[in-house]
Image (cartoon, rainbow, N blue to C red; front, side, top):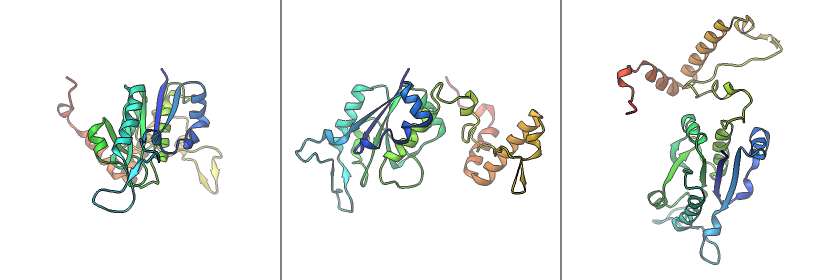
Length: 243
């Protein structure tokens, strides 16, 4: 099954961009995923193809119009009704690796890229749109964030990565940061690879990696560690049932 990516954007020329090279580019050529860009401006009805207007109540900047956005979303849903629609906005829920895996396991995704001061809020009331944030930063538009979301999905598609374990032994996949990595030369500027990694003892190596993963998560991302340790210590009776 081909993973179908649809981008609703004012700048379709920004795609595929970096997704046209390396693993994602090869996967695109091989048909593992498809890409369609949709120009939002094509759904404006006036002769000037207007997509934005001044904010109600006053203020700086411009706001993307609900009627134009709705027409573009309806077009995408007509073509790919099973694909969820994501809107890239700083007001959205931060994307997680868990959500990325869910998206990658599905038929594809439609991503609405914002610009200016964002979207008319009524579009989220009138259409099935999931508000998503890449991080606690503000970009000039949703396109760079959409590229990151798609890259995260595409690398998880079957056959895209070489080793099956490559997608598992990563930061966030187990709720922890990944353990430190080393490679040759064994010594560089007086710094050596930890002895355990050169021991050939796979049990000790595994234990060392697990400990480093936990230590680094605890010190670098206490928010992740709190969630991880809380889930680990939760009694089985508290686990959510699937029935």
